[in-house]
Image (cartoon, rainbow over all chains, first blue to last red; front, side, top):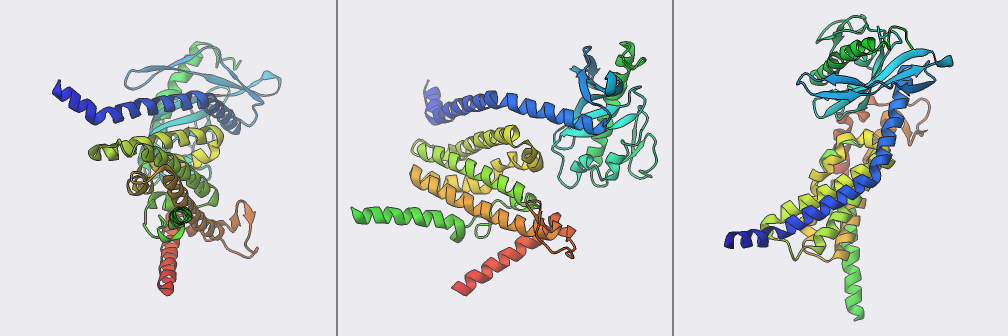
Length: 209
Length: 206
């Protein structure tokens, strides 16, 4: 009883403050979360439009795609169909995630209408090291350009040296940021194949509708 | 009575001015070096970072000052950190909601304000020993001093690295941008030169 009294005497302020600050954070998060989510959706649309410039608008595919991570965890993702004039499919876009060097990396990936070639990727969210790992989002840097040249969809391999101009499955890593480069390649390898397979099973790709 | 009022006004003025020059966190105390070096490639992110630090400093100083009589000495750092972390998280959420571009530009440096020594230093040196008014004035003085320094440093770097400031060209057309000023080396060199200049000025005054 004496010990409990001593504990409460010493730590009551910390306990009360934790509770009050927790409530304050919850209230702030509750108030701002819709705006933050909307900002994220706007950015997703903007990035997808940048990757598929022929798309007039994006429409969410009703069927959800289930992804299984390398650790066996499953998650649902939404796939967006990029539609050009006359609702013609010009490509597909989706968001995939994985762990990077410092934090989670969220990528917006776009592929062509037949799901045969990459149209590119963009970074929706990352906290990679400025000047090094964050070059994964630098559109003027060779790493990003390697995914932009109609790279065939399939298993990619990261190499530390090579010709980044060559369009093949060998992706030349960013010097000084191998972990971040590896993260991008791993995220794409772990997810894109699964998405393609499931979309083919659902008959979404074959006819391009 | 009048003397007491004057003395109080003197304390307030002294507290405010301390952060701006005499105890400037960057030039004098060499605190908060991480954001000073990392986010000063351009004025906009430097200004945003400065505003976030002012917000967190004012809020944490107010809370610490209010609970200063309740603080247990061995738990005070824990309480300061808890308070600071709360307001930094709120600042981060506000940036993500209303200034998403700046939030992305600043990236991990906003959450890193939690470990910014200026804030914990002011909580320990001022707010835990003074009333709310003095704590607020101290926070504003220190915050504005920090923001001003960041903006001056960022202004010099941005102009020399791009020839522009706030996207407006300010250098003659023949100016060749110094790309290095936008890189970490530019931050170290500019800060070093500014610190040298401040020390020379202080020496000359003495």
